[in-house]
Amino acid sequence: MPLRVAFAGTPAFAARSLEAIVAGGHSVALVLTQPDRPAGRGLRLAASAVAQVAAQNGLATLKTSTLKSAEVRSAIENIGCDAIVVAAFGILFPAEILALPRHGAINVHASLLPRWRGAAPIQRAILAGDSHTGISIMRMDEGLDTGPVLLQSAIPIAPGETSGSLLDKLATLGASCIVDALARLDGLDPIAQDSDLATYAAKITKAEARIDWAHAATQIDRVVRAFNPSPGAETRLDGQAVKIWEAEPAPGEGPPGAILEASARTGLRVACGRDALRVRSLQRAGGKRLSAGAFIAGGQLKQGQTFEPMPAGAPETPPA
Image (cartoon, rainbow, N blue to C red):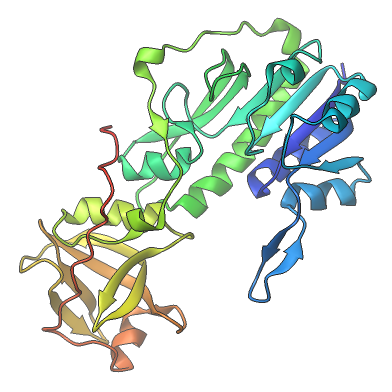
């Protein structure tokens, strides 16, 4: 039976779920999303991905950075919805809002809860070297991703997976899962999370994306993949910032950061604390993203140079 819902979300991950809910025949009576933000080179104000989908479908939309206002409460009360669907909204819901619909608030979360509660579950899963992740559909409570789980669906984290490619897969999976959950909401049994197994997916900082070449190649590879597409794993060469976008562990040894191989034909290989990293694409500050071969052919680096130490200055990611 189609439900009458409110939807709260902001980025593209959430927009995919909103599209699926509309296509599934449910009535989306209200969309909540964060206010327009500066975006692009010109930093012009741009509507969120969710706001854009709402506009395309003629859905009533309220842009807000708080859920504690009388305006928000009244808007949700007035539509008389069966549930609030939440996906990457970015604001915790107060108890009085959660209690308004008969089914409460249902969250689309990009991890297999209780692993990776919090803001950056996709990046944290890659950084930790997890073999699998997935989607959890959770009934929300006042905590941070602590509510009982209604259903889950797992997928493997493929070799070479980046945060960008994994986000796309999970957005598609999340859209499918939320439509499934809404179709049989009355028949799903909530399962309490085991808090002893919980890990926290803290927000990503730019400092964490700095490459420490003293680490093992496998760990640096995870950093490169976790911070692609944003903010990009960063190192320095001759005092200038260089972002590494694609790489993989490779054989080799030498002082950490030393360029062991720099050939337009065979590519770029850099020594790590253990083994080496074969760099596939990189970008100097202010320049274009280039393949390693094009970067070398342009005379921007050569064998014998060393990428400068740039320790992250951030705690290690929680163990897998």
